[in-house]
Image 1 (tube, one colour):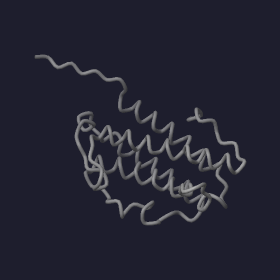
Image 2 (tube, rainbow, N blue to C red):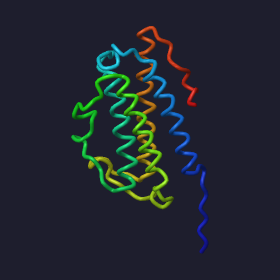
Image 3 (cartoon, helix red, strand yellow):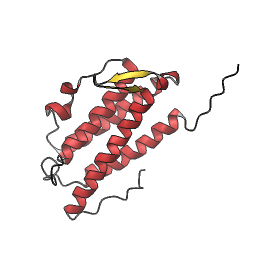
Length: 164
């Protein structure tokens, strides 16, 4: 019996897609007022700094965990324990460091690994590909919250389609 395998998207294309989202999220961080990033919220939503920290924790820690098999547990993550940068500049520096972390670990994910199961952060079981898709979806969700925040502050955010 012959097994035929087809791909819709390559690993490199998936990374480029994700990095496009990360580029846009970085633009929102840049657009956010320094005096509001750590405390402004609407309703019961968390401040943007907390959302960004969650995105960074899941992104960098997720790719590293997938490659090394060593996962931080939830309580060790910055967005849970409050280990945040103190300024927007420091947040952007950490964002860029996470981007480098993703770029360094990504090529080490074998094609076979995408189909394997992981227990991400000691709490979330799923395939590697579903974990990566969740991390990307989570970023998009939190970035949408930032769009609402910026508009409520009277700031026109970057166009959602401008990912480069």
